[in-house]
Image 1 (cartoon, one colour):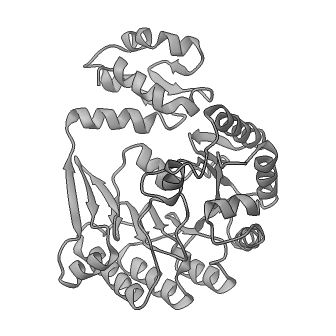
Image 2 (cartoon, rainbow, N blue to C red):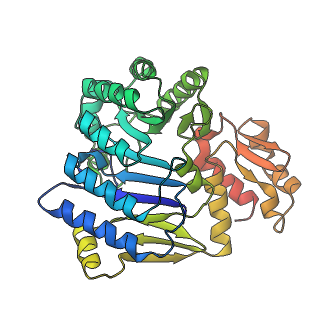
Image 3 (cartoon, one colour):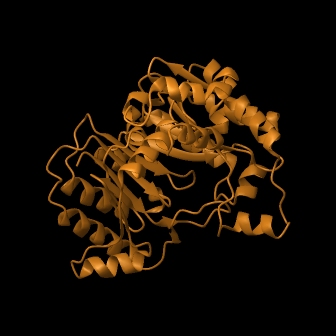
Length: 374
């Protein structure tokens, strides 16, 4: 296995919009978790190759204290071979970083950080329930920029009361630190989150589609003018700084997920670990597999994944993969309206969404699937 995702299920507090599994760090659970991660890694016999990518996500991995983060990273590098060519990423939040943690991460081979800034406006951060303020975010950006050449900044658009001016101010402030990669995500209410519940109770009104699209287009315009390549719906990178780990997901490459709620993909199987960290630790203390669900993909499932993952990227999909179902010309004919509207483009046998079509990806992906009879 060449690609690994490791889930750290700990946070300072839960954000209003987050539906990823995490808990507030308490007691000895961190030590138990690190031991369990080591045991899960040992349980696989396919870790002998040097990793291409390792991505540590959460949660907030950098909420771990200095001793714990050192022990955690040592556990990983004791079992996964890392070299200078490995893209070794860790997610971080402002307010949880300091120079000592940065030094520990570099000592263990971390060479890329994904920083969850989300906004540099305190009102927006408060609405999102973030545990940091704008000044802490800028302090973290300054610290990271001084220590890493490869790092990414997450921002969110579509926040209530966020207008063009607020969005532009955040981007312009971020540019001062010259990050080689920026991810811009739409605020999407997910079931079970406080944000979703407040919307259901009519306590919050989300921006309309037109307003959200305006901010999406603003982000793309500003970022591409600054030389960032819009290589995936939510991701922009300077040349050579595309996120290799995420590209592996979108290309349906195999990866091993480690930790509670982590997903894996290999062959025709997708699997998921148990979600609860206490259960995860208990299971592995008994040297039992933490896998909770296994899905066997059919040929139709695989083709659908090729479409909905591939169309997230600027590279799109190759129609010849579907030649046994129908010819590329037949697909083009079925999609002529969207092609004529400049939402979908076809270059030879490669079909992709245009920059105009990307914000409509959900609708257009269904249209492409119908044209392919999936």
